[in-house]
Image (cartoon, rainbow, N blue to C red):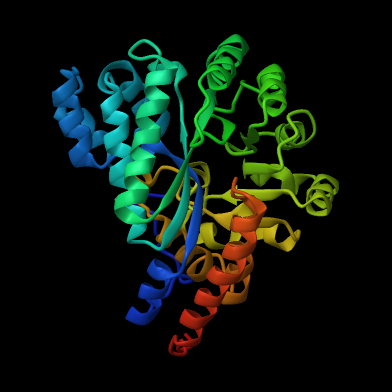
Length: 368
């Protein structure tokens, strides 16, 4: 049974309405957002505006379909390809969408954010240096205006060739800026295994960049998670859900302190599980039972109709995480952030103190 729910919140008895004080709590406590695709943050209004500015053939009906969540929503990858092909034709568009989303997340308690963005699909319109400079400019402006620290994570287009991935890393090495801190890989995992890109990952690590990888996202085999951990040497894994199919691998990840940037509204599981199954069968619950370190993220917030603060709320109100569990998630997010150890230590104290103070002031929840 597939979900017919048009939004991100399941129609489930496990989801209870929360008092206003609790709703506000999830918006204000300090957070790090480390799994967010820049192209997935574009509001519908900005999308329409960019289509006009670029002279793109994308129609208003197309745009409406892009932002509709129903039984058969338009896939995010199709939306991204439209953006790459005919809409994001100028570097300044990247600056604009970066700044706009930093303003949004500032209102959700985000203090630090890392954006994934893919250059390979944009190469027909702009050089890597121009694209990276535009993103970095947006990050600097966002920090100055909204107080959010932002970093750039160029990502391999796994639907392109391994040689394209190597070229991306070569460009990262040739045009280094302090805002670009690591390398990721995304787009459709099916048929595009992580081992194909070992050379790009080795180059990135050798150059001093951090690395992460989307793996185990679309119900794909756990060996993709194992490859990301072992061959690509990722200490942070994006999604990683199918690791629970291999308890020995999960135990190894737990022992090694691998941290998973999970997404409660992962579209694969929303499509394949019924409304009544979501709360019980989403693999995040199994990952928690396996003792894996994780923290919630928004992924493609505009396309999935979710915010990062709502992702944290769903962990509590849908997946059954306690406030104590969320406090541990917060520490995991700080540990997973690609920042210096001194800053991590300071945030670990300051952010958890603020979380504890805000949590202490919450009124008791009535039992159903």
